[in-house]
Image 1: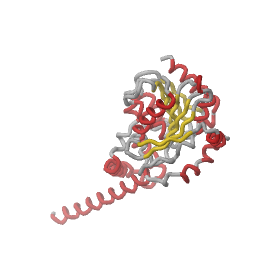
Image 2 (image 1 turned 60 degrees about the vertical axis):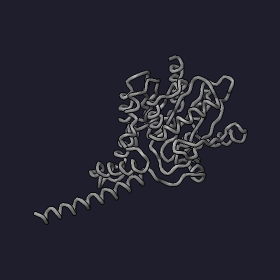
Image 3 (image 1 turned 45 degrees about the vertical axis):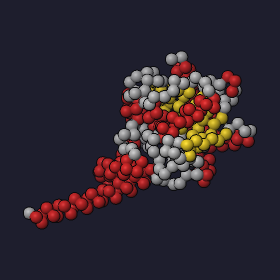
Amino acid sequence: MKSLIHLLAVVLAAALATGCLAGKYMCNYALCFNPHGTDDVERTRHKADSLCPGSTAWYDGLRAQGLLKDTTIVGYKDRNVHAVYVPAADPESAQGTAIVVHGYTDNHLVFLYLARMYRDALNYNVLMPDLPYHGWSEGDAAQMGWLDRLDVEKWIEVAHGIFGGDFMVLHGVSMGAATVMMASGDELPPYVRAFVEDCGYTSAWDIFDSVFKTTFPPIAFLRGPILSSASIVCNKRYGWKFKEASSVKQLAKCDKPMLFIHGDSDDFVPTDHVYKNYEAKVNGYKEIWVSKDAVHADSYAKHPQEYTQRVRDFLAKAKNM
């Protein structure tokens, strides 16, 4: 009997050690990817142009004119975080301010099509932050929107200080959309009056679970214990857990207008996430658009005119609420 107990103890210890190592690996794999900085920003210029041709030329042109400017603040974790901002095409008749939030492994440069849409088509002032550990912002790991929302909430104040006005919209894509949804459940200034989320996930746990199944199929049956271990590591290192980083829970507290966008062919953040997010928002006005034949973060590229019109119409409604 003693030998059996000893054997079980050894097996349990080995399983725990293996689980701990797997958790550390998974936490590093998910949150600590290639270093950020100038090389990373330059790497993504082609992506910006692939999503909307001419985006980087537009960006460079605004820089050359002195219209697009950089700013750096001390973020939530006492690290320097970076953003760029640009006034509306016609500042005197600006319709409001948009904060455009990028996705996982991206930076402010990638979704220039949104900045261009807001500035040139909708006549909004625009601020585009680099989330921590992305672009020119400091940081030691991606925060999957959960702690990122606290930096965005600092950028809200900065943008209002620059542009003023009584109407601000937060618009995010992928992890940026999750950031926006997570921020929507917090107490925000009254001038933050609308949100647009494009292909955001329901929670960090859910997206990691989905990606695990497709990335590591031979051991997919172990994803529960491994993700649990990784979440413990994440909590010890960064102060949050995978299930805590929940768009769904935050949306339940949001009562301001929100437009939900998702591609019907998205196989990275599966399309069912948008329905769960949409259902979770039980208070206030909401709209949903599932764009045809669009994969992940592809709705604008597939349907630029419809995308712009849907955002325009949604914002017009939000202004009257």
